[in-house]
Image (cartoon, rainbow, N blue to C red; front, side):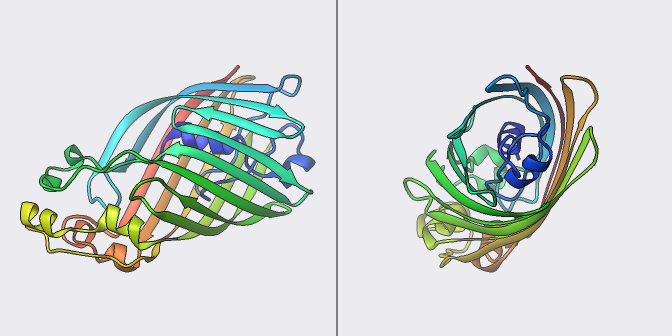
Length: 274
């Protein structure tokens, strides 16, 4: 969980809700984990936000160890009649509306990779190459409910991941915005073998049993977030998520032997809107 990505997505969340609440931005979600945002500056096409967050997350996918660190971020958004463009340290994105009920979201970013220094028990495994991922999502909005699906192919050996999910948004006061969502994800054999497989050479180097996942379901989970405006341009954001690894992913030695199926992420931060 990265606050830059989280706020990036929050800038493009619920299109339909924004029609009823013009002080809040048009928005779309791209991975069903992060929604909501602060009010946009209505008299300007630009929306720039600078902030810092404190995050706790697994050291790698399936890890039993957590790492907590400060994460500064800068998010830039440009709005136009034809859609919205976004730029974060992780990548670039575009969102647009199709009618009043459907939103389309594209996001190109560099994929997170597992590093050997994430856990001393990983010594002997090959480092993963940094690769690009393009996520394409369509979301249908029904009042404060939303339902969607996305697919995310990547370069190199990272394969393809898909998501199905939905969520509910709630604005109890003018200054506070809440969101809850659930999702189900899956991936192909290339993705699972890159992130959770153990090659024969890896087995010889580490002592893990060889393992070749075949693709399929990857995880199911939920997330929730809250944004609160406590002055004209200062905002607070908190978020929490839970993910249960499934199928061949959960049976990987990286999960079953040294990791855990249950994955948790927590974050809190503040940001300033220019």
